[in-house]
Length: 604
Image (cartoon, rainbow, N blue to C red; front, top):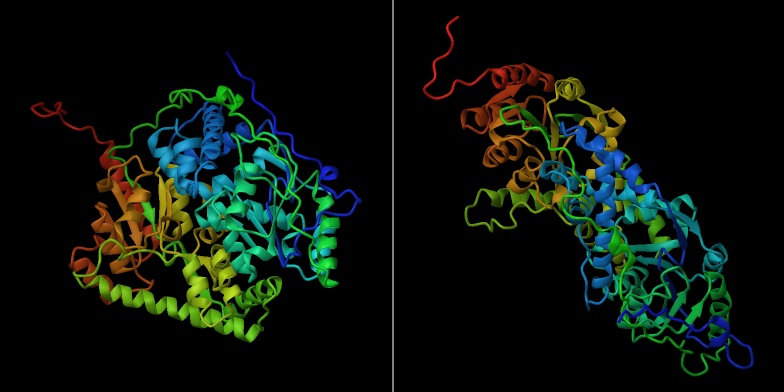
C-alpha cells in the first residue's frame, strides 16, 4: 500500500489575530534575525543551470589536459544536487548538524562521477565553483514588504542580522549587495562560513552575539519548520515567525515545534512589529504569551521526486584523463614568484573604515582612529605568532599535528584585531572574518606581475604542461582576483591556498593538496618558490622532485645558497621564465622511447 505524502496546512495570518482584530501580542524585539531564502528573497529555478555549470567544469578540467563531455558532467551535477538535497533533509533531523565543507560538496556530491585528478583539482576551487553555481541554479527575487520592513527597523534602530544555511555565503552576500540591502544588516551568518547548519541553534546564537542582544530579545524569521522553527526554539529566541514560501508546507518529516506567527509574505510582519514596539514603548507590554499557530505534523513522504534524478556512479561517462606519467608538471608560489607587491601605507585606515561601518550597523560604534589602530596592532600580533611558531618549528619537541596550522579568520579578526574592542563588535568580526581577510588582502599592497611569471604560465599552457599554485595567504579568493586581472586564472590547474587548506607551508598537507590534483608523480613535478624553508624544505619534504628558488624574493642570496648546499633546493633562478629551459629538457626526456629490459636498441 502506497501512502501519499501529506501536506502541512499552517494557520493563515488571519487565524492568528485576536477576535477583536488586533495584532498578535508578541514581545518587543531588540533585534530581528532573518533567513535569506524564503524571507528576504524567493527563488525561481533555472532549467539550464547544469548545462551552464558543466561548461565551466569542462573548461577548468581542460587545464589538466582532461577532455570531458559536457552532457555527462551535467548529469553528474544534477545527480549530485539531488543527493545533496537528501543529505540536507536528513541533516535537519540531527540535534547539532555540521555543514559540509565546500570541497566535500564538490568532490563527494556534485563531481563524484568525474576522474579523480579532475575531481580533486576542482575541489580545491570549490568556493569559486559553488559561488558560480548559486547564481546559475536560481534567479533571486526580493520578497514583498522587505524594503518597508528594513526601513521600519532602521527608523526604530532595531539591528538586523541574516542567519542562513548556504553552500556559498559569498554568493548570498553579493546578492544582498546587488539588491542594495546589505547596508541594513549588522551581521550575516552563513552555514558554510561557520561550519554548522540549522537546526543547530549555534548559528542564531552567533548572530545575537554579533548584534549584542540576548536571545529572548530577538525575533527569528524563517520559512521552514524543520530548520528554522526548530533552530529558533532550540536557541530560545523571543518569537518565531514564518513567512510562507515554496518549502514551508512540505517538511521532510513530522515537526513537533510550531511558530508563533505565520505570514504569507514579509509584508505582513510590519504591523505585528509596530504593535509590539509601540506596546512596549507605552509601558503596556505584551498581553499574555505569544499566539501559537497550529501546525499539524506530516508523515514522511513515500518518495522524493528528486530521487528519480539520481544516477549510478558511472553515469557521467567522462572521458578518462590521458596518462601524464613522465611528463613534467609545475607548481608555483604566488607572492615573490608570480607577484611582486608594493606596501599600501593606507592599509590600516582602509580596513579600519570597514570596521567602523560594521560597528555602526550593529549599534556599537567606534571611531576610525580606534579601528585603524586595532588593524595595525592585530596584524602585528598575527606576525608575532607566526614568528614564534617558526621558531618552535626548529624544536623537535613541538607538537607536529598543529605546527603549520593556518590562522582561523575568526581568530585573526575576533581575537587579534578585536582585542580591546567592544565584545559585540568582536563577535561580529569573528562572523565576518573571511570577508575582512579578503578586504585586508586587497588593501595591504599593490600587486604587479613579476617579470617572466606570466610568460612562464602561458608557455606551459601552450605546451600542455599543467601549472598549479601552492601559496600561503590570508585570502585565496584575493589571490584568484589578482590572477584573474593578470588574465591567467583560466590557465591554472590545482591551486592550494593556506587559508582554504588550513595548513601553511612548509606543512606537507598544502603541497599534497595541490599534488593530488596532478596526474603526475611528485618526482616529475617542478616547484618554484622564493623561501628556503617554506618552499625549499617544504617542497622537498612533500617529495617534489625538483625545487627551484628565485632570487629577489624574501630570502637573501646567502640563504638561498645555503638551501642549495643543504639539499633543500635543486636550482636557484633569477627569473620565473628561467624554468622554461629546465622544462624543455624534461619534455625531451619524456618523449624519448624507453628501452625494454633485455632488448637491444635498433642499429642506426
